[in-house]
Image (cartoon, rainbow, N blue to C red; front, side):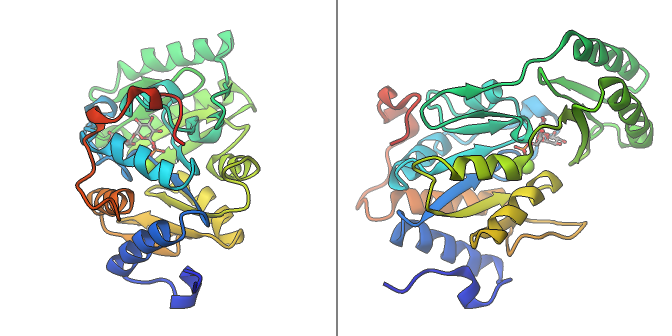
Length: 287
Ligand SMILES: O=P(O)(O)OC[C@H]1O[C@H](O[C@H]2O[C@H](CO)[C@@H](O)[C@H](O)[C@H]2O)[C@H](O)[C@@H](O)[C@@H]1O
Ligand SMILES: [Mg+2]
């Protein structure tokens, strides 16, 4: 079989070619690839606030079906806390790296978590109090990380950035400032999305496969760099105002969802069953 190598067709390609390449690679060579997917802006559309996102009802089932096709070599790599990511895709528990890679559930279900210290709890409380001066700015407590969102009050952007730089100093050198889409976050510095992908690739069933990483934001650039270096492929969703290391672009989260649904259901001969009709015994397992 001719290997489906993204570099052979001369990247970067147009969004439609990326979609066709992705569907083809995942369906024709399911044993060759490992898939790493960001959540916000990639699997689900960006919403006005963190809790306003909508997970399309078919998406969890499609992800699980695709994971089974890849023999379990599919992981979510997100800035969300791990329990929140699980809630989005319940009743299934996929391998997830949360807090931008700082915490991670392995394929066997064991979790490498990171706890908030009492000192960090104080930082979060001080930030929440300060945010009272910025109407419309939302503070998202993620346990060992905290985000300040200015999407609904962009006029406070510079104030929020200055404050987050200050609170980062209070939090100490175990933390770093993560910029994102209309958000500043203070998160554990011990890992990033790229190192999380590397860790997965050391474990079965990811080991020995070529990685494909798909994301939409600056935090995903770390995984793009890693997968590019490892001979894999990287795809960024939509806009990349500051440039990107991704080798390909797909226009929207909706386009990606449709591509993943096609890859999940290809060859079934029938429409894929809805997520609710998949056995709940898949909870915590994907293969
Ligand atoms: O790595 P991701 O899965 O993409 O998560 C990154 C951050 O996503 C969330 O914030 C972003 O999405 C919100 C909902 O669409 C949006 O309102 C906000 O402006 C975006 O920044 C999430 O709230 C963060 O915790 C994640 O780190
Ligand atoms: Mg994202």
